[in-house]
Length: 133
Image (cartoon, rainbow, N blue to C red; front, top):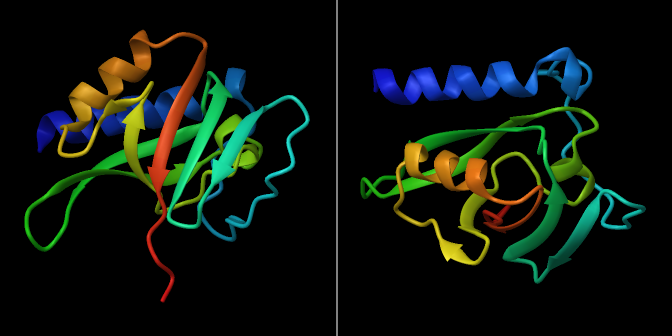
C-alpha cells in the first residue's frame, strides 16, 4: 500500500507540474470529451473499449484498484483539464486494458507505470469503459 501511494503521489506530482499545464481540477471536471482530433492523438471506440494513440505527457493520474473479487485494475482517477489523453477521449473511471498492445489486466500499477515510462513518445493505450447503467 505504501509503495502504491508513493507511486500515485509521484504520478500526481508529474502531471500537476507547471510544465504540463494548469493544476488538476478535482471538482467540476467535464468528462464528456469530443472524439474529433486536431493534432492531439487518435481515438477509436466501440462503446465498451476505447483505443487512443496520444503523445506524452498524458496528463492523467492512474490508480490501482481492486474490485469485489480482488481483481487488480488500473483506473483513470484524475486528469488535467486540457490533457492529450482527455482530448483523445479518455474519461475518468476508464480502466486501462493494454499499453502498446500488451495486456495490462491484472498487472500492478508499478508494472504499468514502468511500461508507460519506457514506451515511445506517442503511445497506444486501450481502455475499458465501465457501463453507465
